[in-house]
Length: 406
Image 1 (cartoon, rainbow, N blue to C red):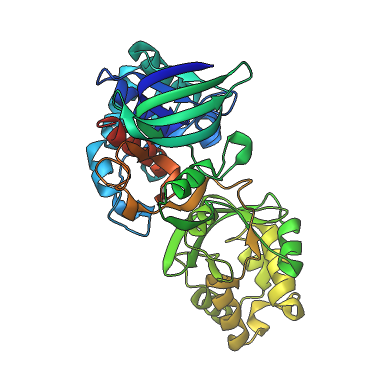
Image 2 (image 1 turned 60 degrees about the horizontal axis):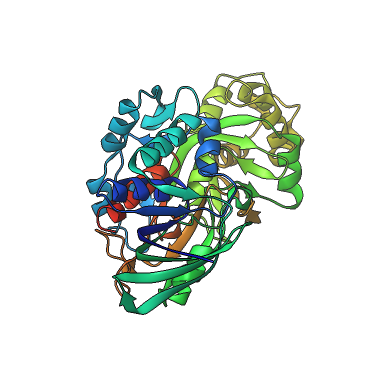
């Protein structure tokens, strides 16, 4: 059984863990990264459709959700989007700005992962994969400055590893096929750190019964909408799926939805549907409501809405439908009230909402207040970003902040 000592051990070779390892190694610290999967950076590789939305040009605290909305500010100031962009440019990685100031690799997510691994390699960071952490304990009588001991199991052998600083960058519960797990929360519990309740987020919604049937009929149809829930609204494209609804706007609002909440879908954002329907009627319009709405919405969607909202008027010209009926239909077009039965859960969620309570962590260093040398960074912490590169920026910023002192 081998017994090795390091200045810093990082649990998890994802975005936050690798950034922390690089930053600590730049301070001439000996760094070991332990990854339970067979490959590093799996989530980096799949992100952004394989092109990695690695940050956003405009990152503010308002783009994040946490029990303490101010917690993320210090780390985000310490390592900004421009700092990461400088790193990308140093490695001559081609990137582009897309809508909403999102930055993507032009070629592949592999470029970002290879950049991080090249930095680790140049700095002598040691990375081990296929490693199971069997136990972690705090060393009461610090031997040679060592404060934590980790027992690991690989296919070949069991090891005891001691370190001065232990960084938990294990990610969270989202997308278990890419290595998501609750191990970081178990460690937090072991060290008696409080947890904020967790649930899947940046995730599609599912429905039951009649609405599910409509979604199945429309599977693959996309339309631009505004969705509102709990005083938050987002405008973007929505995609119908055979289970419910997805697309960027749905993932965004899922950060603010809780079981039992209704969502409100404006199918014609920036258009007062009541007004345009009544105006068309005043023109003594002989076309049907379906035909008129086909110029504003996907035809397949209009057909489904017709069966749902105005089946008895489907053959009538607009001019023969009462003003009250048109107002009712217009109101629904601008505020379609739906109650999701659930989300698709961690299987497809991009992030996990909640996590290690920020009250237990120093916002400047990511160090557990009650356990010197123990750090929590990235998704395991109760900081959840909007869609659009914000969660990666949190990973870079929190990893860097811990790496400066670990």
